[in-house]
Image (cartoon, rainbow, N blue to C red; front, side, top):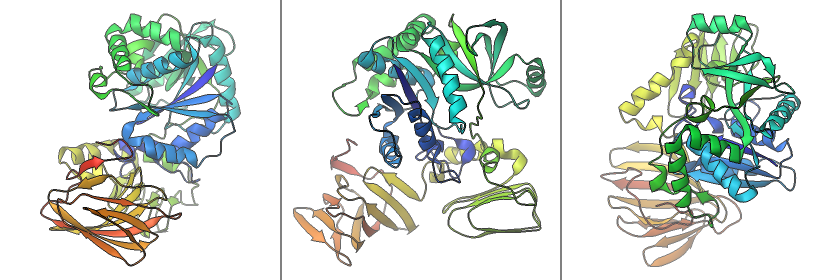
Length: 474
């Protein structure tokens, strides 16, 4: 049995300001209208598995579930989720997934580990490589997928294959894994023909991986096993115990297992592949005009050459410029030399160091019940647009330092305000003083849209005391 395991997380800091900590790279919508996560799901589903396991952060579960709901999958494919309380890198995530699958299907369950932020468009060639990897995995190999290098890339790890040791199909024995090389070394690897880019995709049986993890990284193996033992498995989705998971080392699967394991194979991928690791790579998905400019959104480029412009809400105009990246979002604007696309992460590092909220959140924030958008804020006030999906509700909560005034714009709202419960329609409102328990729910069949006006001496999102929550949030 082959079970695709989708790893969905990561910050994608090189794609700021669209990728943020609360809305990372896998959820970025590409020019064709689908996100990287959705494309990964469709690629996994095309293999016609009985089940697909997604391992993601607790905070991303609802947006992941909603993204999946937009995709039409073949009947009979079950979607399972495993929720991490925090990111601890790929080794703990894959180990927890292996324990989950072993518990469900036994040691012989074959895992196909797929990062959720890669782009592969040739499904047929990908399926052929998966079949080769699956056959090797059934022989006890830990299999990785290598990408034939198209250039002397210094941003990827490399796999050196033993060309003399063919293992059946397209598989080759792995000699070693190599970290991101210098330019000189990368050119040497490219010329040799023995090296492949490390794609971060893997295929192995759950039992074989867990055995190698115990041999190669016993401390990690024991810590993951302890976290799994402490995790209640009767709830849906399964959420890994937070306290014990926090004690696991933050370590990649390459470091923990693949570089040390005895039977490791590589299947060279004969398919197109991109990790969409920068705005340069994402811009390449947009057709260029005669001047080499690529535009996503509304823009006017005059006497401009070889630029990439992405605009979400407003017109962007350029005049007499060349080799620029311009990425405009409602609350942040990136202007960069196109040759510095890999360095955008340094901006995010500086924003985090200063505690700036734009490193973490967009102006529109996704919640399990819908979204909210900050329209305006200033001293002692903040104005939000809140959208609550049909049948959804916010937590029963109160605030220490702010009051709120809700005005329904469209739809119907059921409001708990202290000891009273009222129903509001369009143009009706309710005022909630600080310290008053309140809840907003949508009993209707269409979205409930409302404007919230906050006032007080502190308006941070951490001034929320939840008394009851349908989504298990603290």
